[in-house]
Amino acid sequence: MNKILLVTALIVLPVMSSASEVVFGRIVDIKGSGFISYEGKTHEIKKGEVVYVNSELIVEHSGQVTFTDNADHRFHLGNSSTAAVYAGAVELRSGDIWMQSVNKIEDYKLTTANATVNYTGGEAILSYDSTKGKSQLMVINGLMKFSNLRSPELNLTVAEGNFSFVDPAFEEGMPRDPTPVGEKTYGQLVSIFTGVNPMDKKSAEIFKDHKVAHTETKKETKRTIASVPAATHELEHVVKAEVVKMTQANHASKAPVKKATTPVANKLIVKIYGQTGMETSATTAIYDIPAKGISNRAPASVPEVDSGDASTNMNTIPTTPQYKESDKLIEQLNKL
Image 1 (cartoon, rainbow, N blue to C red):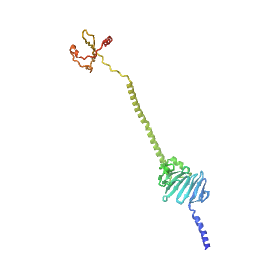
Image 2: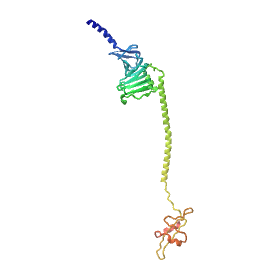
Image 3: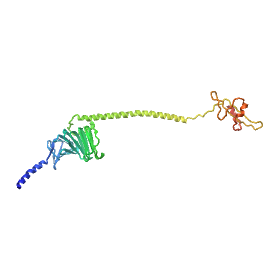
Image 4: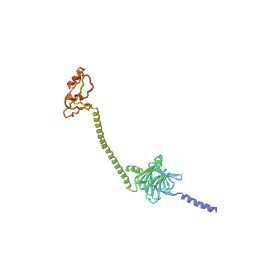
């Protein structure tokens, strides 16, 4: 009985050991050098070898490794990059990876230490800076769901020709709103991978279109800026006109004010009143006889006098305060 159990155990154990080695895929190509670590053992990567689930791939500087799985997914691991493979998922631990998928039926997952990319088809480049903890995704073809690994509710969809990132320092790890990528940036990212081309050759045209749109935006901005000097010149003219007006008004206010001149009398009448034997006194009433064309109306302080005999109307003229007339005053009056 014990012999039967021992034989059975010897048969089962190898089966269980081989069953734990689940094949993930295969190494398609390698440039430079790299290593595979699996179950505590590490060896140099060789083209064509089998890759098992839970393996870790390490690419040295100036190297590149291309591997596939059994579900029509291809991955290009860039230089100085590290990735681990699992059943139905690949984790980018550092560096850059370009994934390409023609499988539009099954959902697949690409992760980093803080972000997750879910997709069924298409291609994209995912980068992870392990120093800053920043994950960046640029979609070349298709639509992909980009989310925070620890908070899946923080997610958005990134369309082809756009990029986004997850950074703990940006809005608490919320993926940034997708932003169009220009041809120059696209070229820089693609150049990281030697000999890798998009599955659809027309994909590059999307980034060229973004560049054209960006250029048009700049042109519109320039036109808007160019219109500012014209408005400025118009404003300058208005300001200058106002300054001129203010200057003229200022000069006018400082100009000497001409005193109102009293119309020159054509005739001066001096009337002296008094009684014989009394001290001579003089009361004068000066009336300006206006020139031709000017009203004959007397000053408001002097009552109107009817024309006629001077002796008759003499007593009707109100007397002014009496004062002694000096010789000097008489001389001035005679000169008028």
